Amino acid sequence: MRFWKEHVALRVSLILILTVVGLAMVIGGWKMTGEMTGLIIMLVGLVLLIAALAIYNKPFQDERRR
View 1: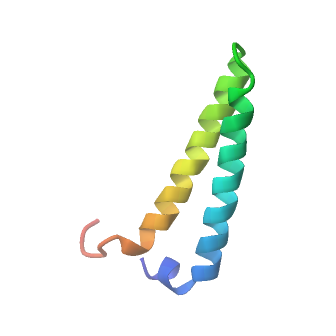
View 2: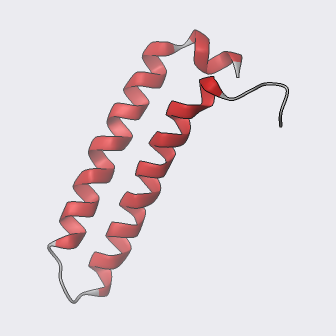
């Protein structure tokens, strides 16, 4: 996708923010052993980490294959 190739600073800052917040949520949820809230926090953190990975991979996606 052309947008992510042209806006490198936005892409890097989003990846950094999502990674830091996602890791913090996973670690914070991990410390809440035995509580359902901790599991939900960890799952949301995992979604943020996967979103950061998707943003990282977007510029390398082949535009012909959709």
